Structures are given as C-alpha cells and as structure tokens.
Image (tube, rainbow, N blue to C red; front, top):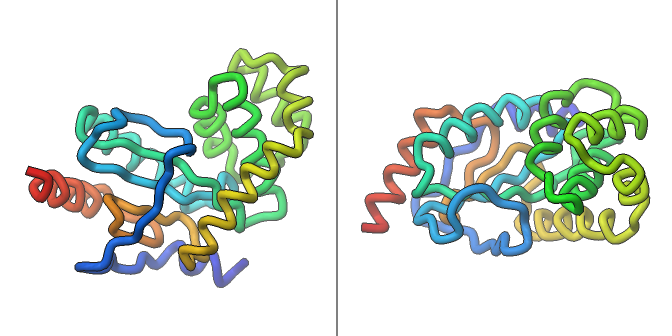
Amino acid sequence: MAVLLAACANPLPAPDVARVAFDPADAPARGRADAPVQIVEFADFRCPYCARFQPILKRLLAEYPDDVRLAFVHMPVVAQDSGRAAVAAEAARQQGDFWGMHDALFARSAAPLDEAELRAVALTLGLDAERFSADLRDPALLTRVRADLVRVERLGLDATPALLVNGRLFVGLQTYPRLRRVVDEELAAAQ
C-alpha cells in the first residue's frame, strides 16, 4: 500500500499520442452525455489523493458545464474498507444519489466506515436507511464494483487517482491548471 500511495503523489505524464480506449457507458456520470471532453475518473473513496482531487474536478465541471462530462469508475485498492465504500456508493446509486454518497465518502476518506457510519451518511442524504442497509449486502452491487476493478486491471492501472481525458491517461494527483490546459487542447482539437 505504501508503494501505491507513493505513486499517487507523483503524477505520471500523459502520453503525447497514445489514447486508451475505455467505455464508461454504465458508470455514474455528471455533465452532458454529448460533451466534447469525456473524463473518466478511476478512484478509491479511501484514497487521500483522490479526496484532494475532488475540488479540482468540481471546479473543472463548473467552468466547463457544457463541454465536460465526468464518469466515475471504482478502483478500490487503497484500504481494507475500500470495497465497502464502493458498495455504499452503489447502494446510494440504487436510490438515485450516487453523487451525494460520492461526495460524503470523499469528505470522510480518513474516517472509519462501518455499517453504522455508512447508514448515518445515508440518512443525512435522505435515503431509505433500511433499503440502503439491505443493498449493502446485495451481492449484485459487490459484483458491479468487482467488474469495475477487473476493467481497471485490464488497463494496467495500479494507482489512484487516474483519469482518462478523451482517452489520454493521467495517473496521480493533477493540478487544476494542467487539467484545464488538457481540456482546452481537447476542445480545440474537437473544433
């Protein structure tokens, strides 16, 4: 895990030419489906670097509301309870509030995540707590999270956070100016 976290702090440069093909069609997403810039975030709710990255992504979405779409793919690899956090997000998704749980989990990336804590978060989001608790035990949701992880492993990713920006791969915590420059490059190329 120490190696994994060290990789998160040292971003790798994006390749200049190569683009990675990845279809996030079934992933939760924010932004217009037809946006010219499609970003896929591979993250772990327990990763402190992923948590630090969230304000940067939100700012990017706010600045480019018609031009950027962000899809989220689970990559629960950092901590023992990473999978539990991912399943909790999927349980909230069952009730239509993936992004509320997403934001709450990243806000609590260092806090313990037992079922009581997750249930309390669900209640603050206005979710049906009984249904949420039942969904936490639904094997289909764990299967969905594992399927994301298998897809991520096929890409050869082993560190969080990671992004694809129109297929251009970035691994590690990125700065806002760098991401904005990449988005501007992609918008210029689309025209």
